Image (cartoon, rainbow, N blue to C red; front, side):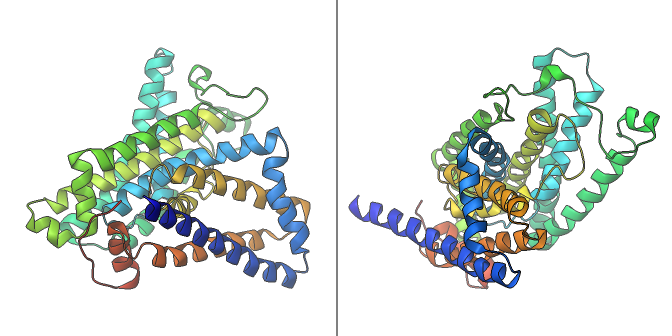
Length: 368
C-alpha cells in the first residue's frame, strides 16, 4: 500500500513538473513577444479563482473536458488513439439541436432524453466510422479521425448556414450561422444563479464513476482493456478484438457527442459556430493528465478548465497575442504527453499507447 501511494505521489510530481516546464518555456516566448510573463501568469492563475465568476466559469469549461476525457480514456485504454473528439462534439451538438427543434411539442422530460440520445448517437456514429475502418480495413485511426474532424466541421458549417439556420437570421437578412434557440423547457438548470454553471457538471461526475465501474468492474471493460494491452494476446485468449475496437470508438464518440449536447442545452441553447472551442483536443490532455483514469480526470478537467479560462483572461488583461495563448496551450500538451511516455511505461495502457506513439512493440499485461 505504501509503495502504491509513493507511485501516485511520483506521478503527481512528474505531471506538475511537466506543467511547470511548459509554463517556463512559455515565459520565454512571452518575453520575446515583449510581454511581462510574471504579470501574465499572475492573471492566468489568479483570474479563475479570484471570484464567483472565475470559479463557475472554470467548472463550466471542465464539463466538456471531462466528458471528452472519459471517451478518450475508453478508446485509449482499448488501444485506439482517438484524435476525432472535435468532430464528434460537432456531430453531437448538431444532432442535439436538430432533435430539439424538430420535436418542440414533446414534454420537456421526453424531449431532454431525446436530445441527449440524439447527441450521443450522432457522436457515436461519427466515432464508429473510424472504429469500423480500423477494425475491418486496418486504416490508421489517427489519420481517419483527423480527417473525419475536417469532414464534420464542413458538414456542421453547411447545416448551420443552410438547412438548419435560424429562420430569424434569414428573415432579418443577418445570416449569422446558428440554429434557432432550442425550447427553454429543456435548458439545463443553473446551479448558481447569475452564472453559467449548470447541472451538466453533475451528469459528467456521475458518468465518470460509471465509466470507472464499466472499465474495471465489468467483463466487457476487462476485455476492452485487454485488447488495449495486447491485441494479439487478447485474440489468442478468444477475445474478438475487432468487435471491441468498434465498441470503444462508439462509446468514445458517444461521450464526445454528449459533450456537444450538453454545450447546446446548458450553455449556448443552440448550435453555433465555434461551439467546440477546442475541447476535443484539450480533453485528450486532461485524460492523459488524469493518468487515463476516470476519477483522476475529474481534477485534471477542472485544472485545464481553469487554464483555458486563465489564458483567455491573460490575453485580454495583458494584451498577449492570441497566437501566444495557443503556443502556451501547445507547450502544455507537448510536455504532458512527453511526461506520459515515462509515467506509463509500466502500465498496460501505457504499453499500448507507447507502441502507437513511439513505434515500440505492444505487450500484454495487467495493472490499473
